[in-house]
Length: 158
Ligand code: PNS
Image 1 (cartoon, helix red, strand yellow):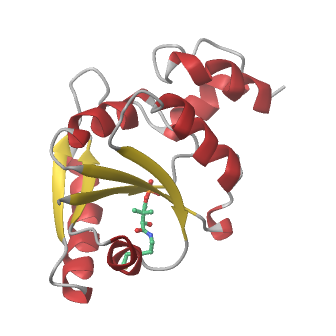
Image 2 (spheres, rainbow, N blue to C red; image 1 turned 30 degrees about the vertical axis):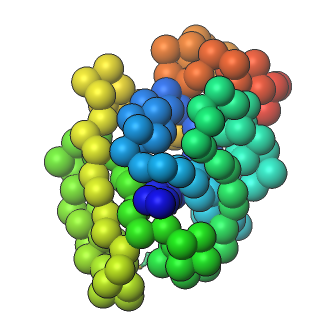
């Protein structure tokens, strides 16, 4: 059974993330969305909120599970018996950082491979930061965030 992990902060999950989730769920038998619990990153949404929002968005995807994790990603992979890490690339500017992390992870655990998916051309500019910035000013985020969580995001900034 091929188990993949799509890790991230997901503060909050965006349509760009959702695109990667759906596409990568077809590549593995089971996809675990690993939500990093790291308060040092000062997330706007708590770990519980981030997990709940992703669960809401992925409720119809049968082979997708949402879990939080702390510590090293490769340790979480080992714990979950996962051998594939999935990351999305929006632009060349993402690549340098992602390559470094993928190489570090491979050095830490040679049984885990990182696969990069090119973000759909619909969402190259979509990020959690952009969603938060637009929501903070009460503007329309429906083109950036999954419809079922748009109200949850606005609520956070009321
Ligand atoms: O959505 P993000 O913030 O770009 O996700 C980054 C994430 C969670 C994938 C990365 O920070 C991570 O894996 N953190 C856990 C610690 C770790 O294993 N770092 C890589 C080895 S240096």
